[in-house]
View: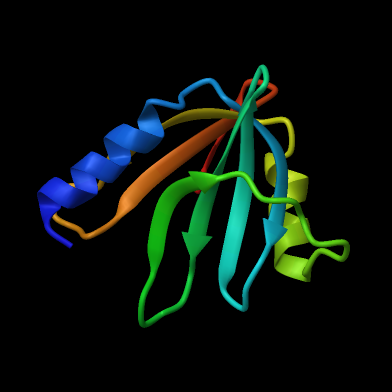
Amino acid sequence: MTPSQIHAIAREIDAHRGWRVRAVHQDGRSRFRIALEQGSKRRDLVLDLDPDRPRIHLASARPAPKHPAPLASTMRRHLSHARLEGARAVRGERALAVAFARGGATTPL
């Protein structure tokens, strides 16, 4: 990905600043969905942690599987009811920094 593509993804995610985390679930071996909501609007922040093809993007909301994986449970414990604080491209890296806040504390992802 080019720096401009990474900045575009950061802007798209950042546009959802203030949305609340409703749930976190795993829907693939290395893919997690952070379910965001604002009023009746819902989107999923998809994190694919595949070491060969890592990705992050917004997608339409999907239902959670019945049994969460251990890592999804840990993410859920730390992010449930958090608020998306924003996203930004990391200067000099092909990476994004995404931050959430819950109870006054900010949790970077």
